[in-house]
Length: 360
Image (cartoon, rainbow, N blue to C red; front, side, top):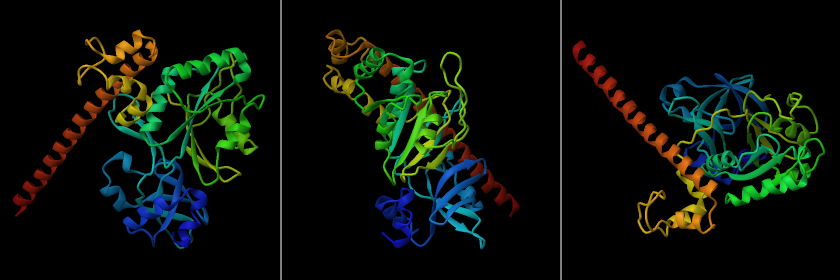
């Protein structure tokens, strides 16, 4: 690793990125990490500090996929002007890991959330927000991007210890075996456990619905009021405050990406995440009588037999069927869209060629 690269370790650079930089021939280029995206401008950081930057015209011209544009957490090749107060981004480094979802609405396209994350902290409130099906949806997305998940259950001060234990049991019954940390931003319970998880030079991301206490947790972790929070409603339910994704440097050297709450959260291209999150169901499925078993009503279905025997919870199975159907539908729609885009691109090229011939 070059001396220049070592200076970037504090921002999450490691030997994996060093090898990728050599493959792309970027070892002599200045590199920086994206910490925020504001429309057509980006905020980046390197060993010299924070700078504003924008994308080079050539990069904009040659980049077709929206997912290839830089997002929070990306490493970029950058050229600074003489004053070193503004930079031009020429390239984006390969991503070691990523978080992405289907774009909101009817658009069948990927939307990048963040990249190069070591651990995703999936936050759910014990009071109003707790939902195992939604938690499984988050886990599919996280594991699909090669990110390690940890579940944070907030607002434990609003429920009894017995109720908290029941919630944790519900998570276990769904076949979720990831680490679960219960905490309260009011009493401070569990905060030290979260601090132990956050390690220097590693990147973490907070995911969860609006009002579950993400911003309040960050303020506790940094010992101040870095992020705006709002008073909770009369029911104890929080209110949305975060409006953009942003990478924050914590005092211990860890990096934490805060994200706005997600109103829509569709799955697209989630085959790997489905396999990891529902490994128990896939294990039973491997024993089905027929290789193309849909696990709905076929004879000899080991999955249905496991449900009847009590080895598999019905709600867990039902959510699996729902998420699998959704992901497969979006995947097929995405493939159709890409094929249409390619066909249109070929048509445009043929028209340009014909126009060029006519001009001769």
